[in-house]
Image (cartoon, rainbow, N blue to C red; front, side):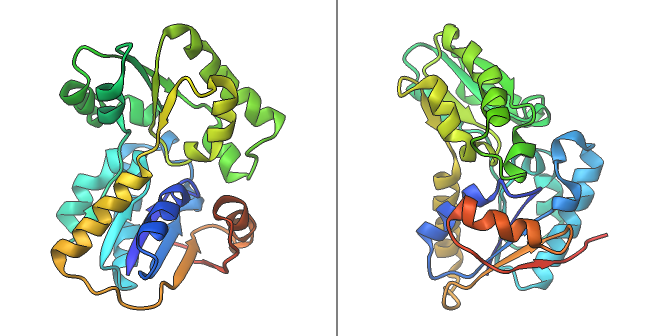
Length: 259
């Protein structure tokens, strides 16, 4: 079973890519909505939650674990790899391809403040963006709007324009999305940028990595592609309402408090 988790619903953008690439594999997706958003929490809190979630998903039969959250990857993936023996896949902003393909030598990265200020992002910049100017911008309020299912309203449109519009005068030609919630706002980003600026969503790269690890470890597909959805908040009703909106399909949602 492929297990995936995020602070909330943003990781469903990765779920879509993994599901498309590996339709026969059962996938369990956990949204840690009781602690969402992670971007406002300390590194210690995020690591503690990551280990709790990881232990729970391992107990449910996870064969491979996808941390479908940039902030959790930044803060906790090292601790998770030390704590668990199963393969763990993290996610990071697609700075490498954006920088490599830039013609203007100027790109932008959109992510949470926590991710943008992290050592992990700085390492990516040092390794892959030499000679490229990278503008870092936080999507303030974007995560909360996606969690609320407000993908196209005027408040969401205003929040997106406030961040993206000033970039139009910066001669950038690529934007790397560094939060799994942000791909759900791509239509609003496109309203501002048009087609002149390319957006990079790392979800398909994560799906390829998962497929490679499955092949390397010789894991069996294990069944019929059953999908399970879990939230750590409430009774699952809100998440049940969001799934058709975000992934186009309804599913029952379980509530599992991880105190």
